[in-house]
Amino acid sequence: MPSSFRFVHAADLHLGSPFKGLSARDPELARRFAEATRKAFTTLVSRTLELEAEFMVIAGDVYDGEWQDNAVGLFFNREIARLERAGIPVFVLRGNHDAESVVTRSISMPANVRGFDTRKPQTHLLEPLRVALHGQSFADRSQGDNLARSYPAPEPGWFNIGVLHTSLTGRPPHADYAPCSVDDLRARGYDYWALGHVHDHEVIDTDPHIVFPGNLQGRSIRETGAKGAVLVTVTDGRVTGCERMIVDEARWALLELDISGLADLDAILSALEEALRPHVQAAEGRALAVRLRLAGENPLRAWLLANRALLRDEAQAAAARVDADVSLEKLVLDVTGGEAPTPGTESGDPLIDLGGMLAALRHDPEVLAAVEEVVGQVTAKMPHGLGADLDTGPEALAVLIEEAGEVLLQKVGGKD
Image 1: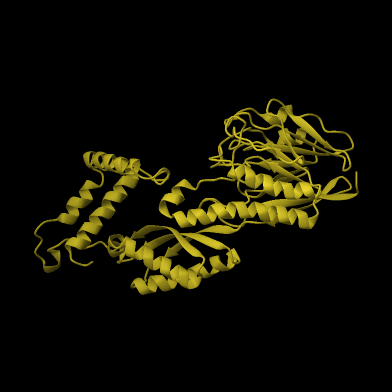
Image 2: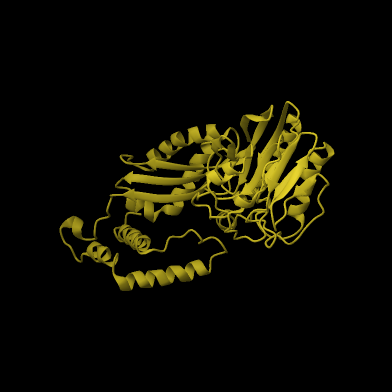
């Protein structure tokens, strides 16, 4: 075995991700993130070539699912061919998103691509480096077996790598696939475990190294922060370096802004601009999609609810003043206080306790059932994926009724 070599460990490329929910809300933003997913892999290939890594390992989910057409396969082929021309092998394992039963289309790949069998663990040997790679691809999307226990014994005197798409003992919100324990992995006697499936970078252990590189590109607000792969350095048969390779092209950020004590819209927008600047700086020139959550206690609550569309546009304009590449992905209002007065009560002449009536409706079973039915009808007509993350539980519906009541009071009170 050479005294020192390097390889790239990546996973969860999710090429061809449709961004369905985002496409319905903001087609342009969805297009940019789809493009970023491809660019991130192109950047990874370029970095691999620049660093003269000996080989690349992709631990599952190259594709997000069945191809709509051959474009996604042609793109992957084109990028992998760049590595093939440089003599760099690529070891590809199928995960739950690109399992054999899921992705049925195919494009002939360059000779440097080596896959792993779906029926049983398979070992690939790199003779010049004395490296053995052991792995088993998913035959079906739902893989509930502990695959690691059937992986073969290590090749004596070689550097042994286990390649596995797994949730380990559980990594919510990721589904449980190929479950196993850290002890199961240690028991195989390998020198490095190249894992996939979990989209956050995580070094589980260093004796041996058990690593989730995370995905190459964040795909939703649940995947914030820097994304990429890892560059592994092996010296005298031991891992001496495991360095992150950040290759993402766009990022997500969740901004929670407490607007307690802010007197008007101008004050809120000024605070928003100030709070956005650190997120823009952290993105280091990348496009940034922000979910804005306004919180705290503020007497403007009813006005904000009644003018949500205007508020969203003003927030987007404020974001653009900070940086042209910031997009407001979603606005969430979680502000308390500022109850609108019931018409007539300001002058001491309560014609009717409209506010009290509306408050009583919050938990009325018949009203909740009626609202749930209407919400169901509306979401059923939405473009596919748009209402996927909509909470329709009793408490969420009660909040919806309360907000609608406050907007009504605001309108009746003539304060819009």
